[in-house]
Length: 168
Image: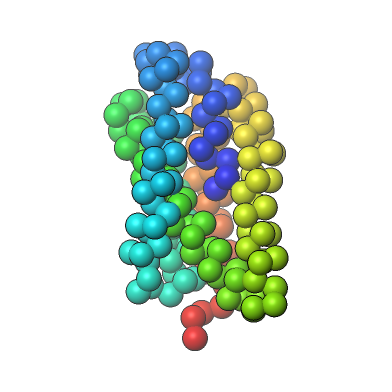
């Protein structure tokens, strides 16, 4: 999930040319994502309170995937921005719920460390995923990284649902 926001930066010219938008307009894909994260973190965390945490994480990953599929298939700039916002809502909710799951699973003595590991995963995704996604987007087309993120997030949803213990 840490790759999604900034992978666009490395493929702005390709997206811009394909959509017939300026670089500045295409850069709004990053801005809209950031706004979605700001809105999504508290909102999606609150909306998923009634769900088991395992189900919430899996569903948020599915929504994340759907948003990426939309970005990968549509040619409408406005729909792409809407999909980026949806994807960011899911991302914000995922990070909020994942931090709680990590802290609760680790217990009081190790909660800070567990949350740090979860958040560290996002940093690793930025450091490795953004350059790899940019390279892939420049090599196979800008939609490729979004397809990859969609597939990886569905695999992640299955893994989360299988590996995260059910709420007690």
